[in-house]
Length: 208
Ligand SMILES: [Fe+2]
Image 1: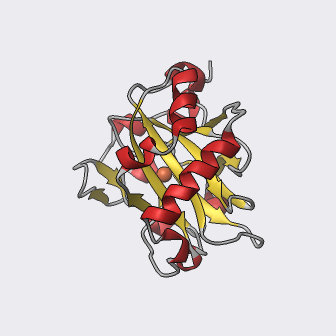
Image 2: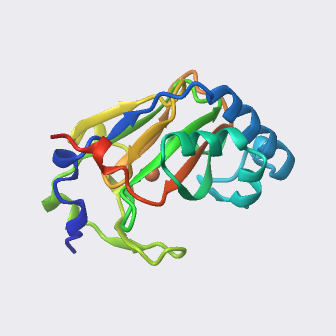
């Protein structure tokens, strides 16, 4: 099956774009406090689910620095999810790609984000279209199942971006196939949040 929306992504758009943020420490403190109070993520050593749906409205209420920052960069958001990488995902968060309607997310490092790398790969359409597709049970969207390519993707395809999200928030292209790989000095649990903008920040992501 040919998923046209993926075509030429790596040629048209950047894989990631680092944002300036002078209030990252406050955002991290407020979000982490919420995570500690309202979830068990800090102690969870066994979950193999990366994306954790949370009561993001409740999180936003106690994270004024995050909301203030989103207002400052004029980017309203419609949802926040938590990304949790613990010991049971130490071989990486499997190669995958996002699907419409949204092309880009804005992610913030929260805890233990040193030595963990997001890597994007340009995989030609003629390879992708031979792969099986899966339907996301929450969103109903269709995407390629990239599991088979995960382990050797660095040997077989061109890496178009590699980024350790640690000191800045970042706009991330979720359509370009990517995986999240802990390095030898990664600490767990590694926690980040992904915010979903109401509108794609296309202007910052265009290559030309
Ligand atoms: Fe992703």
